[in-house]
Length: 593
Image 1 (tube, rainbow, N blue to C red):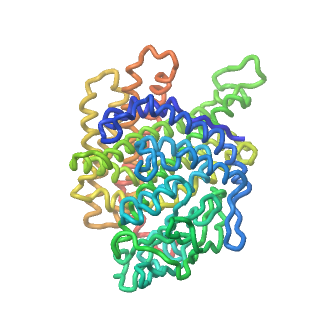
Image 2: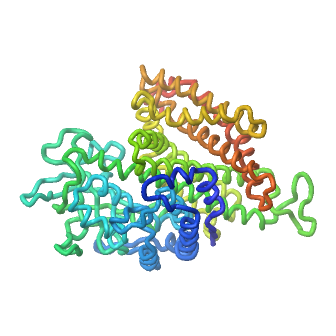
Image 3: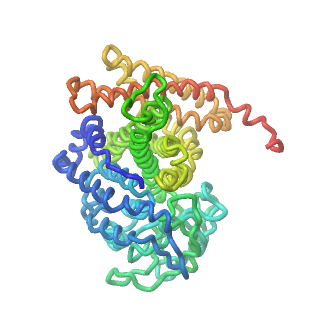
């Protein structure tokens, strides 16, 4: 059975020594967000993840969800765990206190979300979707909708979904066919079919609040004609309780590779009653509030799985005896050495560690900017912070989930054949990790978003939110001898990123195919450079503790060196691919595939 211990020491490091806690505490409402307040929250979150959610991960995967006559039941123990989770206020950790939430920073919310994803990713889908729906209604709903739905979604009594995908359209939402016809009472009648709806039907909450994309009769074509509607499973009564069953029914559960305890539903809306959220034909913009949050959340899923895979691979590598070290016997009192001594095992473990810790750092920095963009009183400061979040969203979603897949595969590899069988639970991590590269927009779509939208938008303003602080950091430390081994590789990678950015922009201006051909490599180049910035900053923090007796900072410096020397050089190959252009992709004959 897999084990998991929340990496609280590293989480505290990124929150208190890497991110800027004073910047967070300067925001209205966060003045008291000190370590004395936050540490107990993290410790209690670790307990529920380790003691309640983790034990259900394996059994939930084996049992899965079941459906009978449109009723979906979650695996044994999930209802009790969900109730304990809701009673503890974990679903409303970063929600507004006026809705019953705890009002903690989203920075803390993302750290807790990582723990949930490590312990039980499938369980985390239910409160995760609810929080996204909460955010969309909070930003775009009217006062009546907020008063009716938000408190019950925050306390877990009601849950939420996002209903976008249809059999004929996924990425291209302009092709949706679900219709919304106005009724005399101000509501709408929703008719259509949706697929791949996570948490679309289950037995955890008393009501499920679906956010559904549909088109009005007078809708213009394409995405300009999409509207967003609240469609409850049960129609709320005047006193706010679940009443008559609405025409929203789960017709099937998808048979999936992983996250089997998460109910992924095919939903039929048959003349279901719904209410418009925001303005007509502006539903996609409203839904992007939920989708952008979800994309960051999916990135955290990759991080969570990378962490738990790393922890179990390290434990196995310490215990498993196979062969002798190629540079000599290490465990003379044993019949063989632990596989931890072998170079390739150490390469895999260090890669997984560098990925997880680097991603955790970038997540904390981005989440802090998300809090600033939400709460700072100065409009320009808010815009600058939001620019950074907008830029990082596709990078975090794609790179973190790619790394999550890599790390779970490497974790299995460390186990060898024992990783391929079910006994140790490593194969479940691999299966669960794969979906994160697909939903909320495949990683290829994230790359296109980066080069096609984020790069040119506002005359490159989003790019400047990253380029300017990184350049300033390099210039600030380029004369620091102690930092030379970290700043020089960062500077070279940053130069490659600048070169690639100029080339992709130049080619894409005249031929969009060229930008698309470079997109995936460009996103990975950008992400590796961003992590190099994080690792340089973490090394800087670690160097302030030369007398470290715990070994934490020594290990941090060693991991930083590994990243700079063994992982960051990938940027050279990525630039070579980008510079080669897309001609070999374009000229290949369709019939030859």
